Image 1: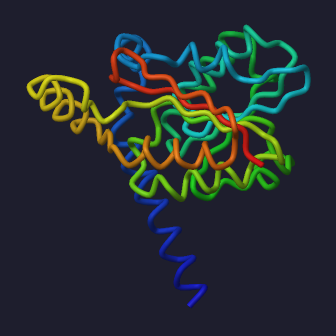
Image 2: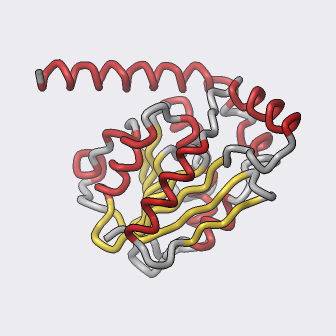
Image 3: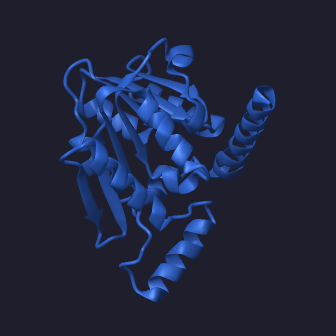
Length: 226
């Protein structure tokens, strides 16, 4: 039974890898130019991350590496790691890091978020900070991704998320239009993601940071994990 479960999980990861590669094979070349207009709140989240010298920060779903390049420029004394399931996106991320002269400061690896093994990939047991930037709304089994992120953190580590909200604060017309457009890119904002994350945060951290962005267009959440 265990072997069957493992095989099923591997098949699911292969399917996710193929799906993301198909989607981003061409989009990755213009991704950062287009997404900057509607992936709101990313820079504010990055600026709020704990970043004392030596802090290990991992981005799950690092995409083109845009956030990692920004962090590396702002926080020269932290250790940075990026994980993505798409080899196409990682190719773009690696190129961007080389252009910025950061290939030795930021380490990349391919894996699904739900099954990251940092010891195998980086020789690192745990991280101080793990974050998702507009990723969970694309992950069908987002709960497994979050649980894996928690397991990757040292005691007292920080989990941060920025993502689309469910658009319940928007007009019905704007909500329908935005959700239909996002669905073309396999992005599916769901109310339960933010709701369950906030509930989790409140059980683990007496002072989680939960901020709505753009009148409920997106949200930022950051909390410590016991």
